Image 1 (cartoon, rainbow, N blue to C red):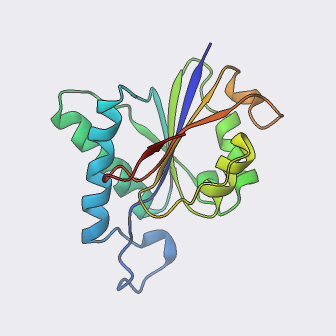
Image 2 (image 1 turned 90 degrees about the vertical axis):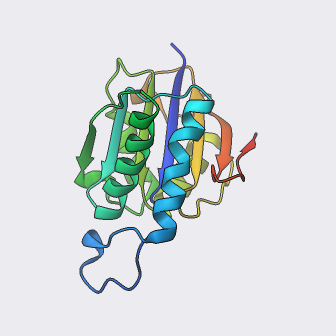
Length: 169
């Protein structure tokens, strides 16, 4: 069964925040950036059945804005699972989260952090994709989630920012 993995780096955070990293929210620019992702997904008929976010506030807020734009368009998005394992800066560690995605989900979306998102994209596709804030990488594969990263045929379908900078690969 073909599957689609959507990797989203969290939106631009508010660097004036002086609290713990996990609690840093997104900033004004981040709210605009994240708000563009939902319509972009809808325009390409990419609708996740499973969503995982890092437990960081900025990752959860990014998904909330994406989900809100989907809801505004009449689509009911899935609830996101906030996983401590997704709060990682290692692509290899994030691969474990991907392998644990629900088997019945044909399309899954993960909101996380760099360099993990960039490393995971390269690990799965062999392509180095810059993952700046609010960047998206869409990866297609024919195999199960549990087998990803074992040399399977995952392919980069799109990469970039939905704010007018996404390119087909």
